[in-house]
Length: 379
Ligand code: PLP
Image (cartoon, rainbow, N blue to C red; front, side, top):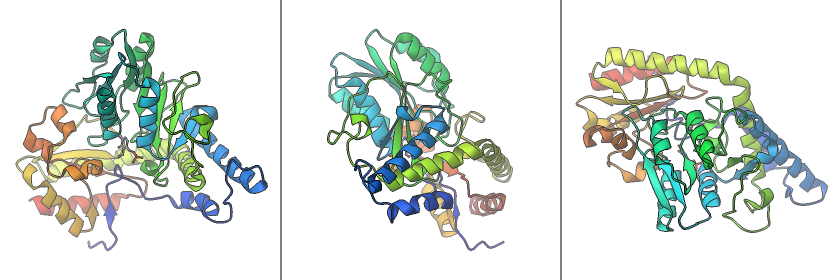
């Protein structure tokens, strides 16, 4: 079968905008242009839209609207969480992991340069942090623990509830970079003892350039961006009204359809994995078999790890977009993935992973076509 349209299997890098999100945003790129801080009707209309979006994001997280601060990205939300908590207090201790996204990892490096002590917890071969290791790493001076909900490269889910509870019992603040998880798996702030949580609209069919930080009531943060005092003084700047409306709409769509969509994606993902392992016996799964994001697969092909970029390009020529490692580290070219290295993979294997990530608009027909194309390339 020849397919003319391209197949997009790189939904962890970014997702296509949902047409319903585009529709919700459209008036705010056009007729409704007021500044939410203005007191006239144009301003009030924009303010209402921002507050409605805030309630939609809060509903997705089981949070209150006043616990949501809009930012320009997931990266900015995590920077605000980390710097805002620590406030560059010398003598303070922060714990994170070896497999965080650069949004947290590089921020921790910057904290370390400012004199903050940072501990990076190791992970097992499946990419999971052992809660016992966190308990051992905590110190009287530990002020903050930051662990991601789902890894962007391998898709593994962390035991966030356990890690956050250990942190809370210690009296420290728990931040979760949930950029890959929000909108894909249930995250209920009423049940999870998480204090701060970062998210980004473009990872769940919303627009790029807008994110949010959940801040549990009572948790105190200092701002990174100073100015007109928008977002309760925590993120000054005129709000990106259309983007925020898009984030709200994306959150509402994700909340409404999550259980059905999760089941559909798990089915598609497992079909892809099972058939691929049958057709390509040299293929192996990277990361935990079950504790992983619904649409996420990370694979290696034994003996062919050095040819991954060639394979990616051949798939691209055949109309299929996948990625190696993470798009966010594309500039690092052929270096081994620090995430796979932390999981114990040797440099060759750590360089040669293929990431296949499915999303809302992918179909079974696309999965089957992909298997035919990749099997023809490998065998
Ligand atoms: N955190 C994780 C786990 C990610 O996967 C990404 C993007 O890939 C980010 C943070 C950065 O999000 P943004 O692109 O909104 O800055």
